Amino acid sequence: MNIVLLGAPGAGKGTQAEKLVDAFDIAHISTGNILRASVKAGTPLGLEAKSFMDAGELVPDSVVIGLVKERLKEEDAERGFILDGFPRTATQAVALASELEELGRNIDYAIAVEVSPEVIIERLCSRRLCKACGYIGSKGDEACPLCAGEMCQRDDDNPDIVRNRLDVYTKSTAPLIDYYRGADLLIEIDGIQSPEDVFKSIKKAMKA
Ligand code: AMP
Image (tube, rainbow, N blue to C red; front, top):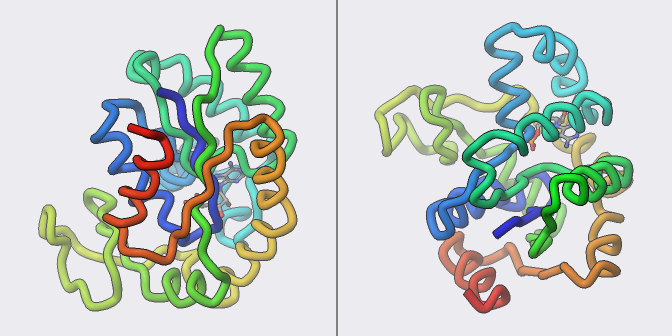
């Protein structure tokens, strides 16, 4: 099972990706997580990506495409994968299609989780992340319910940066919904439901 997850920042892609990974035993490929880990580790990739991420801008296509190509070749992705936060531009979508063709693989579904901009801003500004395990929680969480790690706010989850990330999404990423609709791979899901109900809707649409 190979899945592309589309949706604005804060639509709930990360949460649904984790549920899909558990359900289908496939690899979770989140470009945002890979980039954040690289920034934290101070690698050359992280150093290159940091200023774009801090500003809520997209990291250049060539950088992100290169890292996804490498990640797709790792062993755990052979069983299937879920791409969370990639592709985000038409160039990335075309590069993904040609890389998959070369690997003799294909996308089964492109799942778009849809949430209004007002809800996104509210969600992102109150989102908190566990520093240790990456659990996604919210403002009131004092400690991570999974590992008791310290909760923090992502640097790019502040109101000004969030607005820019939404603009970037509307301009560069939202057009991919039509791209995948045209390829007859699109599933559209109402993201303004509980995470459990969003997941039920996804499974129903996939007939899984
Ligand atoms: P995310 O965690 O998916 O919201 O990504 C956080 C940030 O990482 C984004 O605001 C971008 O700066 C960068 N990023 C993640 N995925 C991509 C991508 N596919 N293309 C370009 N930049 C990305």
